[in-house]
Amino acid sequence: MVSDLTKVGTGRFVKNKIKIGSKKMEKMAVISVTIYQSPCGVLRLGECEGRVCLCDWLERKHRMAVDNRLRKRLNGDFKEQSTPLLERVVRELDEYFAGIRREFDIPLQLAGTAFQQDVWNAILSIPYGKTRTYKEIAEYIGSPQSVRAVANATGANALSILIPCHRIVGSDGTLTGYAGGLPAKRHLLTLETAGQ
Image (cartoon, rainbow, N blue to C red; front, side, top):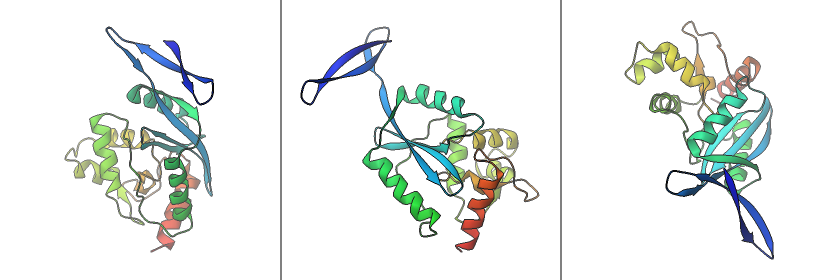
């Protein structure tokens, strides 16, 4: 990794990281990140090249693994800064927590394997205020034997709330693990149930 300097504005220079490839040099993308204080925990929001790639619990168990996956898949690095898109995410989250918004209208960047993306897209189909089991998601994507893999893909979701993995419950209807913790999951499900 080397750096170059790009002139911006009046005589200021910004350092750009450049990844040395076999034949060409490629600039790393910027993943703009900011913090959002929700009623049930702190979320880290991020966007890269006009698509939201991160809406995840700051204090989650596998925070570093999620961040590293985003860096690798998006060929980027994090920069603390707000953007118009992140401000829009904040507005839509505020509306969601106020019980006004049921669906998000934000372009998403799914940074995962093809299987993970299939699972996340299936989760996006779960209606507001409803729940599904891991088994139902596995069947929905045409892989009924992959319940455990579906659970792992759900746990790797970097877009909590926007991809509503809080709507996934155990086969007996009980609340199961959640990156934001079970109290946050309970809060989100209660919010949605009350809004119906």
